[in-house]
Length: 142
Image (tube, rainbow, N blue to C red):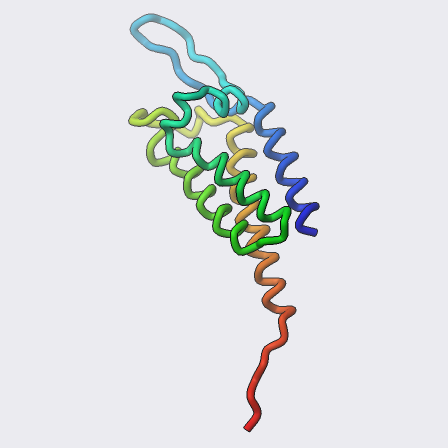
């Protein structure tokens, strides 16, 4: 079951890379129009992307996905939680800090990307709590 969930999350992540993710408005002074960036453009705009906090959700998420695939739900849970926090930091700091961000600038690829981060966290939590219920409880009878 872990592998199936990991495969679904990976497929959704790849879909998020293929979708338009963010609208970057142009400079008002030059009269340049804005651009729509796809998920893969946001991911691979290195090395600049590494300077943003939200970008680091990607390697943390992939590490958590690896742990989910291996069945280590404790580390998958931790990585999923951290990846979700890092991904949501875009709402506080913007895509390119210190710029402000409006929700109208986010496109479907962004929301699928965030859902992948959150999905790993939720899946690991559900599997972890499911495994905790299956373990027998030991009580000492006096």
